[in-house]
Structure formats: structure tokens, C-alpha cells
Length: 193
Image (cartoon, rainbow, N blue to C red):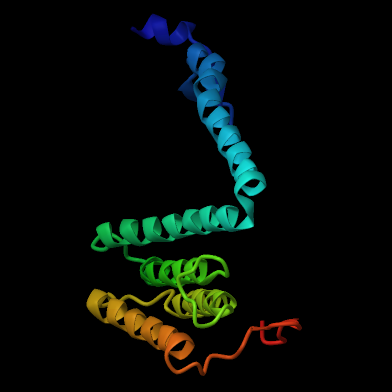
């Protein structure tokens, strides 16, 4: 066994010590193992571009929004499943917040003109987009303020707080209509957006 290791090429560390044996098939086969993933990514990007050409902007926008919502929900699921092991409150806040950011992004997608979900007013989409970005920014600032704290965050309290804030934002847009206008027909985007 020791003669096998001696005959294998090795990687030299910064100080000249042997770090690990290099297996030649790993060096030669790295590209061969990665090309299916690169080809799939390239095909996905080409397909996404073709949806814009064939299905119009609405289909392209919906797929792009669903992709971002899927990532946001994935971050939430990972954090919730690892809650007991994560000691960094920054990650906990960001993980929980992204579920609600994803919810607001979903409403943004559904409110887009032409989707036919919200028919009473055509310009909810920019308001939901601003609400989602505001929640994302505020969550990042809030999470930064918790860095270095040792006490554990209460999961139920954090989820309840974000649910209440999200409900308030949604109600301010759909029910009370006090959220600032972001688009005026005939003029375009307002200064608020």
C-alpha cells in the first residue's frame, strides 16, 4: 500500500509538504463529469430565451419570478430544517424572511397586467415588487443587527412577526389602498418606485 501512494503524483502545499495524493482520473475526468450539467444549464437558458420570443414577455416574466420564488422557498425550507443546528441569528432571520419575500414576489407575478388575477386595478404589480424589496432590505438590516448575539431566536415569534408584517403590506395594497402608488397610467412609474 505504501508503494502505491509513493508512485501517485501529489500536491505540494505552501511549505513544500505533501498535502494529498492526486488521482489522475479525477484530474482528467473533471470536465467529463461536469459537461452534462453545463449542457443542461445552456439548454435551460436557451429555452428561457425562446419562451420570451414564443410566449411573450408575460410567460418569460412568470418563469423568471417562479424561479426566484423557488429559491426563496428553498432557503426557508433549509433554514427551518436546520434550525436547531444554526447558531447564527443572521441566517435564521434571512431564512424566515425569504418565505414571505417569496409570497410577495408571487403576488407581484400574479398581479402583472395580463395575468387576469387582480382585475380591479392593473398596477398592483409594482406595489408588490416594492413591498417585497422593502421587506428584503429591512430583513437584511434587522439580521445584521443581530450578529454577535448569543441568545436563540424564537421561531414562532419570528414567523408570526413576518406573517403580520406581510399581512399588513398585502392589506395596505389590496384592501386599504394606502400603499404609495408606483405607476400612473399615461405617465409611467412614479418617483416612489
